[in-house]
Length: 164
Image (cartoon, rainbow, N blue to C red):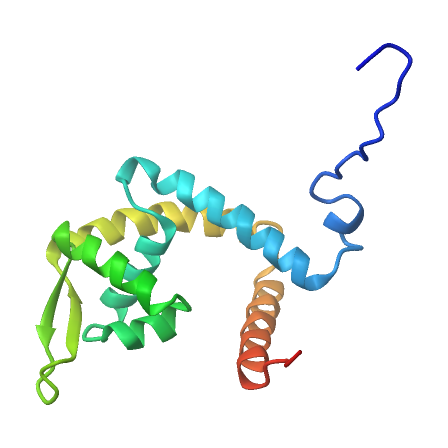
């Protein structure tokens, strides 16, 4: 820029300023917080060669053994195509196994392997450190209120989605 000329570009506010702060719209603030937490988790898991979605899916499969891919997609809020790719990679790496459903043989049920459970445990330890950061500064009663509000919000948004 030449001397004496001011830039016409506005200064982008930092997190916590203007609409990125308490004046911001709740959906934006939720999205901003989610993005920050996901980035922190991705960084924490990077040397384990695990992405946040892979960790989430591995957690769901280990927590609810026998899920189908379709059930996993609904539970994880990811598309069936994304689930298929993640499941394929987790299976390739020996972290999960598939078995046919007892009644409907075309449905494949997913289970975590011993290697998958061990990796999930390592990932969970790192995720717990991030969760501790998230809840820092909240009393137990406040954290309970936040958790209740987030669950109510998700339930409400699923029960009555807005139509344009």
